[in-house]
Amino acid sequence: MLPPRPAKRRLRGGSLLPSSPRITAFTLIEVLVACAVLALTLVIVFMIVSQTSSLWKNTTSKSSAFQNARAAFEAVTRNLSQATLNHYLDYYDTAWKHTTAGSASAPPAHYGRFSELEFVSGPVTDLFPSAGGKVSHAVFFQAPLGKTSRTDLAMESPGMLNAAGYFVAFGPRSQYEQIPKFLQGEAESDRLGFRLIEWVQPTESLSIYDKTHLGSQPWKWFRDPIGNGQSCRVMAENVIALIILPKDADNVPLASYAYDSLTSGYDESRTHLLPPLLQVTLVAIDEVSAQRLREANGASQPALIPSDAFQNIATYDQDLADLENVLNGKNGRPRLTYRIFTTTVATKENP
Image (cartoon, rainbow, N blue to C red; front, side):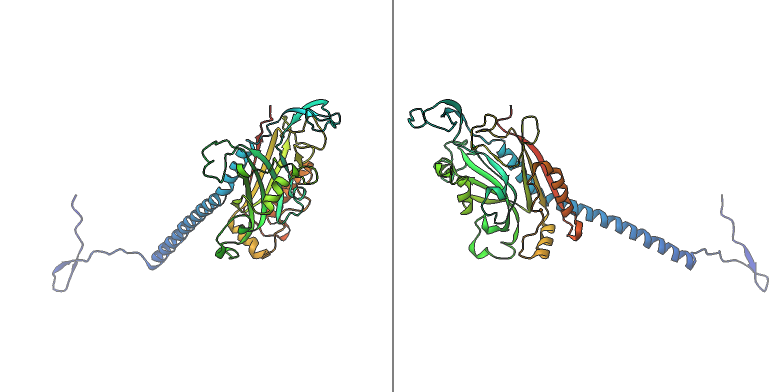
């Protein structure tokens, strides 16, 4: 179909000329409305992209912040599962005190379990004469970790026995880990904070066989080297609590957090035995939260865990809820980003 011919208009003199075609265009109001819609669309798109980017960064940051804590938690539980006492039957006298076969003063009268090794866990206030920045719980044991500081022994046996332990402490990094002297005391390199500390005594330095830790000097085998800063290292930054809850084979908590395989008297159900199960809980915060605490408290240790928390095994759930309230910023405290890791470890005594 041919397009319609343009209308013609008559000029003076009788001649005819084609008329100009009508030109259509947007009005000023339409242009303004379109610009407003475009601007609004761009703002919405920008907000969506910004929120998505922020969410991605926060998620990535949190994942990275707790990656070391998760790795440390897995290492702690793995090593705890290897804890051993290597107990055997030996002689006891009539009062159920350990004796030897040829003893004249305390002749043997009974057979019972015995071990030179020891498993100890519980609140740090019970395990150390002075907590010195240590918080929550600690655990100490022996396990075939095969760690030695002598190169000539390193390849002899990957299952050599080590004494090991874990606890949380507040202080400078150099307190438990060797860093260059010119960095010690520096704000960034040696800053104050909560840390999970690992203590692993090399095989050739084992002090558990030194019997002076018995009697008048209990737990000397881990107190002395830790007090001297020996064989300690920072395992993870910004770990604020470690709780060890011993349980029986039926997954029922025992009567107390405090557990020592070396009992004062002979107990058939406990002496020289590991707890069948150990519920391990680790609480960590991210670096942003740690910096917020440093700004709020300066050189003082933040009171995150109430002094009476995790002392009574019956109030474990309530104590953990109270700690979460503190971390969530209740009662005017700064809100912290945190993560709680919990699992139950079966020991070699678990049937």
